[in-house]
Image 1: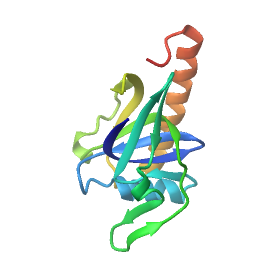
Image 2 (image 1 turned 45 degrees about the vertical axis):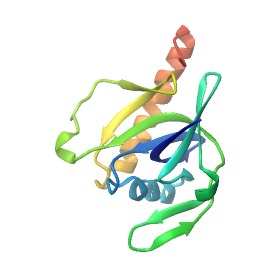
Image 3 (image 1 turned 90 degrees about the horizontal axis):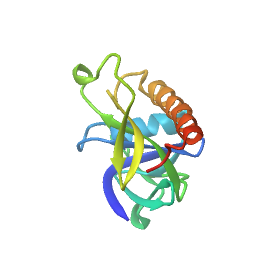
Image 4 (image 1 turned 30 degrees about the horizontal axis):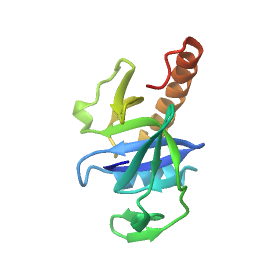
Amino acid sequence: MVLVHASCVALENKGVLLRGAPGAGKSDLALRLIEGGGILVADDQVALTSSGEMLLAAPPARIAGLLEVRGIGVVSMEFVAQCPVHLVVDLARPDTVERMPEAATVELCDHRIAHVALAPFEASTPAKVRLALSRAAVAGQKAQATGTAGR
């Protein structure tokens, strides 16, 4: 198990790991994804474990079901205890986000996971996360068909 400074939201049981420096907007983007139908996995810290061909995200017990909402405080909400990670989103300043990036992956715990860099506070960012997750699912299906999925 590896503990990472990140937040994670499940969208249709597919985990989206949100990474960034403190104050970068992880919790804010997580909240907007949850308002759009996602379910909290973890906020601020995420426990990652490898399980066969999957990388699983889970909340540390002491913060399970808690989300920090700037200006409101820490709130309790529904959460999932474990979810496979399908996408890693690195939060970046708007001027550093590539307009038309190539498909990319990042290695976490010996797993290749789809990866994008997005500006967290743009109104369209939750939609961009959903699009990236959809593309990652299609790429994963192709990889399984050709035998190149997983590790």
